Length: 342
Image 1 (tube, rainbow, N blue to C red):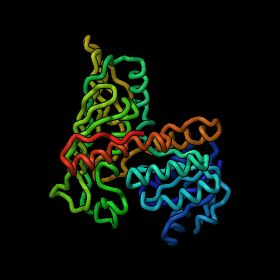
Image 2 (cartoon, helix red, strand yellow):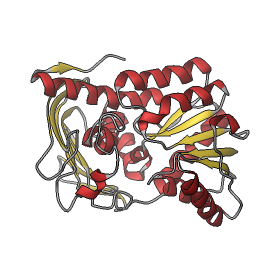
Image 3 (cartoon, rainbow, N blue to C red):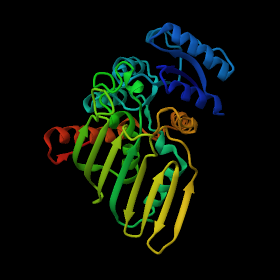
Image 4 (cartoon, rainbow, N blue to C red):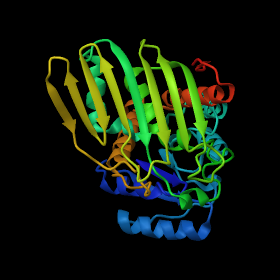
């Protein structure tokens, strides 16, 4: 299959590494970025990694014949790209978040659905082996009735990270730590356990950073499955630690962090699954393996061939944005807030 990479920011190198290591015969037939010089340099570097020449594409209307496009632009640049690609019948695999606001994200999903174009989102935490194993255990009722859930994202970003133009702003990114960093762990919790229905929240900018949006967020929530839970997410926890999800059920509890799942049964048995890995929680946001992106890309390509639903479809990715939208409304009003219905 043939693909094109649109958007050449920090995560673009991860996509190149993923494409270089896959054995599914995916060919990168072009790259596209806003800065012509940067695009040319990136294309040359990508060509060296992949072992063949990668051309630069300068316009959406000059995109070569491809099976799908990888869209890794900031979220404020998505609408026109998605409209052009979907009108041309090109499937789309997009970096998170879908868009800056829930309404804008829903517009993108609807555009692809109307055009009959597959839309996948790179929510790669779903692709981790420990995450997959935990989902299987939950589906087989290993934990019994789920009582409580605790989601924590104690990350660190230094000020130069936020000094980049538009980073941590509502106009470009759609917000701060929740929609840019914690969305991964929130999405994973929702994928594992189902929807959150009500939230109470506090979202603030700490004295440790200068940015428009929040670098600290906390929430209490109620889930559709009857569980209650808490969430804390920040980029102001030096030097940065691993995000985690803790689940307590009537038969067992689970602790998922750094790619390792620990299951503690109420009868005293303890089991571990997975392997420890960096997740980008420290000052280097790209300190994580390309393996998970590779799994997401390979899953998307398989789905294009079989007609199956991607690991993280555009529609399923909206669930985390619904919760973030509810958190923002709850933080402004100080009241218990209902998450928008599907």
